[in-house]
Image (cartoon, rainbow, N blue to C red; front, side, top):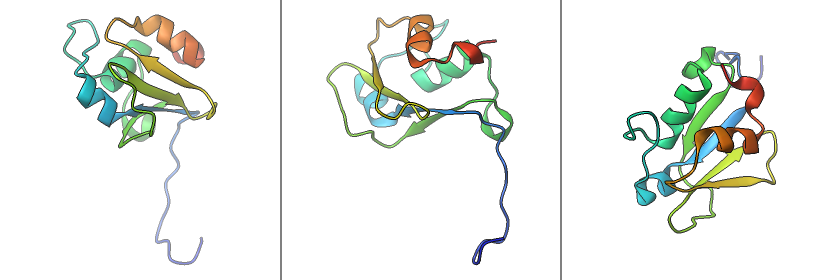
Length: 107
């Protein structure tokens, strides 16, 4: 164990998706079946993944990714750091998942 660490845990994630919380809040777009969910939660539901450490994929809202487009939400797949997606309120979750390369995580 490294100096200064008391313990460590191992997540079961095979990857992570970063959703900009600032864009999500500012855009005010809602997704999901009912049209009332924030994008990160709608992605988790659509992919059928659980939250936290036991999930196969982490969908995490982060403070800001630094892109800040108008009327869209910035999303990044951590496996492909040089490629961001911009989700608008009209975006289809299935298309977005395919574009991010997350089709293998769909339930």
